[in-house]
Amino acid sequence: MKVVIFGATGMVGRGVLRECLLDSDVARVLTVGRRATGQRHEKLKEIVHENLLDLSAVEGELGGFDACFYCLGVSSAGMNEADYTRVTYDVTMAVAETLVRRRPGMAFVFVSGAGTDSTGRGRSMWARVKGRTENALLELPFKSAWMFRPAFIQPLHGIVSRTPAYRILYAVMGPLYPVWKALFPAWVTTTERVGKAMLAVVRRGAPKAVLENGDINALAG
Image (cartoon, rainbow, N blue to C red):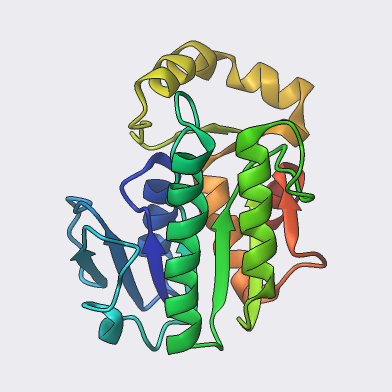
């Protein structure tokens, strides 16, 4: 399997990258983003590209992949809807439309979030934008497209969030993870499980395109 990862320097993306590099069935990994991951591996290649709204300069290197794991995202805190839409919807669709043009036979996995509003018209700004993004992705002619909606994600293996507020949250909540897992198993997962679930859904598929936290954990095994 050959995979391309967008957002491999973020918390979720780093977890997905780790699982891809460890998986013997993954022969090649390409990361594309505004900064390098800092990792070195024999099957890893990186493209540092600032303007993800325009991939024309690197489009020639984006063909031949079996799957895209799209982990790029930002917190909506302090952002207005126009700015959040530009990052969450516009950039995602620019990437997806480029990839589907290069290889419509690939699978596309998008990291959304628990509580995403599929109607795209609810009161929560981030949920509306995420919902519109999911719907637009599902209309593209990929071989398959999967919307991942994780809830609380525990970072493992030395991975930390780049968002300061989230780092504080994880520092406080991390020690309570076993308790949350026992009490609310459908609402907690890990970076490792998210990565394994992405690989699993590309290999075996799933009965539905929108996968909630519990579905992600089930796919991860």
